[in-house]
Figure 1 (cartoon, rainbow, N blue to C red):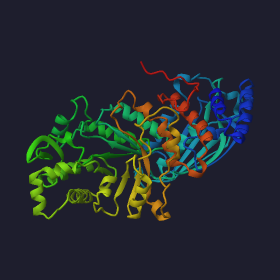
Figure 2: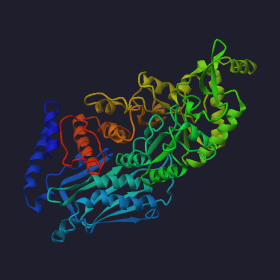
Figure 3: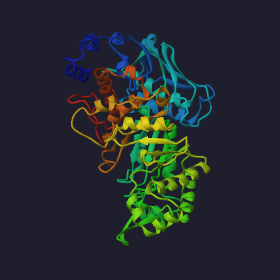
Figure 4: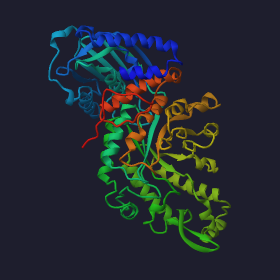
Length: 550
């Protein structure tokens, strides 16, 4: 409450009407702290605790139910009521809602009239698959003293609803848990809401990746875009080509084994997150050097420089290798999509190589972009044969490559007019995801989250049909200066802002004052869950103090 007051004081000159409402709330809150247990039912504004903001929220802050940690239960009902993502969520959220470290072991049976004893979760479908089209909607009702009800068509909608349910619960200074009476109807605005993690420039241990999946679920993201390899290192341990990581990883302690990858994919699924791997080609592949003749030797004045460039697109051995490699990736990663990259390709190295120039002349390919089109066409043909869809970076589109109509294009160039890029991509009939305005690795001093909040993927002058082609977007964290020591704090809670922009209705999430209050609460909540989310709004405090594990 005191932290909330600090936030309010910073905004007194810009939000008079809003301030008046909050001032009344604060007065009631402070009075309630010194009142009896029965008076705990007042002075609670539940909407201040919700992030991302649900589509429809109707709460009665003056109607509260107490919750007994010793008797509260989750119940799964319906065809999907016993699916693994749901049953594991029950175990996980019980510890989140009632932290064992704070347990008193005492019941509150003396005030039965105010108790909420259970959450009944009804899931209509027994299908546990997770795809771009998965329904994540839910309806949460906390309206009766003998229970709360959560209804969802899929288990993943249920997971989103349980997170919202957990955010409605407060533990007061006396150790009593309470929840407001609410009716919430919710669904995501966009179906694609990603966090991109780069594990090539700095290796990130599996345990940190798993923790980040937890935090993603707290913020209702649904895609981990895993930029797993790059020029600097090849930490993926291929079972068909083990020499790639043997020679391409930093060392053998900086490798993701097949069991590591399988564990991450399964963990992600159980918290409602898809894993889309990125194996960027033909550029960003210097760490693939173990595959003989794969990379292009660069020349200067007809002499080899000793340096190598992108994958050589003129050799049939290249495509034989890629066919086998992406067949493995298709088998290991079950998601429908693979990120194929295609950015920052050094066409000059191709054009310096006499063997490539000779081949181009023989095949009547005149320019570097034409050669890139040849390569990309063969690559996407492979993916089609594997029954996979794909995403490419905007460079492929910008270079004039003819793409399959179902291609998804990632807009990443933050220093260009990315809204014009979105217009051009969607005008050509392609789907798009926006990442350009949400680079978490580009840090500066001050309230940087405001600019993230102002960015919206549909804020371009296109038709309604064009804007429907924007699938969503994501926060991006390149790892030149990021590893396990700072990945979580660098992302959160700044990436939370992206999460709300992609989940919530734009019309209800434009007030920075309101957003700052909720974001502060959310950061404090993440601290209470053991997440080292960094300060984001200037001087403030949280009741929970984060203490790093010893």
